[in-house]
Length: 441
Image (cartoon, rainbow, N blue to C red; front, side):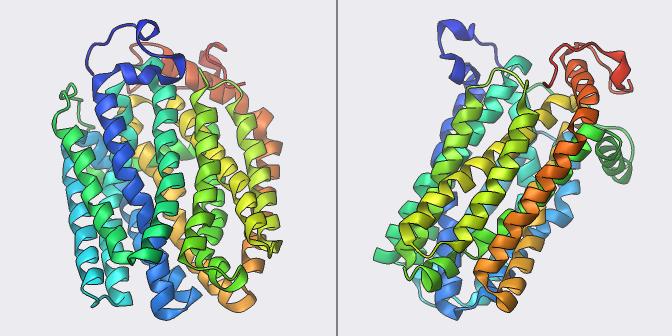
């Protein structure tokens, strides 16, 4: 991590992580690349829906692209803890760019078939299984520990800012020029983040974990399963990911059949969710520490579920657009708060593996949700499927609320432990050993 001047002299409080040169390069490269990334799912889902008209195939496409993430993410976590993260990101981002440009070529030459989209999506999922945990852990390599909460929030802000611009832009481009141009724009956008990574200052070498790969995987799982606050956050995150997938996967059905729109309507619907997500990310940026985040998670789960249910009942386009704003806001508030709390509690030597498990729950549950959404919607219809997902989210929030008071002491101790310099990897972290410094609530 490069030296930096005191942030108070250079950067506003909400942007303090940008005082680090490496993070600035990453931030602005991602800002460009992620707009292209968020154009891609709109174009892919509309392409499959245009070619087949099948909600089942929409779910199959999402499943094929995301199941490799679920299966391979633990290996990606080991890679993140063993090797230079910047070099890995250059390789993974380059591979995803290449696959995206292949899809663009197939689509622009009018030879694309549904199986092309599914196979290329599965290959991107394999690469993403290594890319995602490395990116999550890499944030801690670029900033000082006191700026980590802000860096995570800023990264979430650009991710969700792109969710506003990307889908809306994709809807316009697909309607005017076709899906292939979206894929081409996405492929070229990777050049920005790759260029930023190449000119960064190398981070200090980290000691590699000891033991076999299987022992390393087990060590990460053991930390999560034996740490009640982290375990609870992971389980709730997986539930929200599972239920939230229904709305995303079935959005083309709502845009086309239920709200009687087209590609432009799909872009507006997904852009509205992105707008809410951006507002949620900006809300997180304003925070200076983790105090009170667990209450935000609780409120977000229930708001998310209620908004999904209301969206499923709407048959008016602009009302549906408006309801997707709180959907996006609450899901990002839940996931961003969980990310921040988990990163604040995990030891550095386990960061890659634990964030791989976080990513498994965040993105890895999505393929199961996608397949479930397509299958259930085929049987009972898209509106009932989305309403069911919202109801399950509310139940999950209620269960989390009943466990909150029991989880707080351990969470406070873990956060305090990571703020204590010189904590060795071999030290066991237990709740009674620490004060209430950095407490979670």
